Image (cartoon, rainbow, N blue to C red):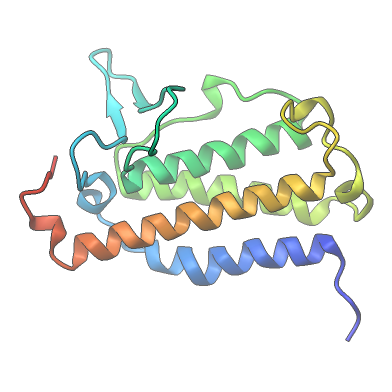
Length: 184
């Protein structure tokens, strides 16, 4: 069997996690699960007084990150797939018009599937040499790192958040979804 390239290994890692560890588990996600807040002070997506829906977010340093809803996680994953696609394959920054934050599970998952599909297709079409080149100005925190390191980071970020979605869904469906802990 021929040795896989770094590009092929990274794409296989991401697509395996998507296909077998996440997507098949989210296919019938309900709106109640999507928006469920298992504890007080969860980060989610919220509609403002003006009708604009946004992700809860701040840059405050914390000892522990806030617990997030599946809605927050799905929209965050959509954001980072979209942001990195635009920066590295369209050479432009993410703009507010590039994202929406749906209040329904079906729409949130559709947005995520589109963002993931676009990112994956771009990774597949990039040359092996692209994975060895520095990220450059598109990645201010690690401009000298090879593109492969960024892809690995995005893969880890996706796997981490996919696992959080799965855990929240398991907790919801195994009795906590109806508990009085906190259910908005």
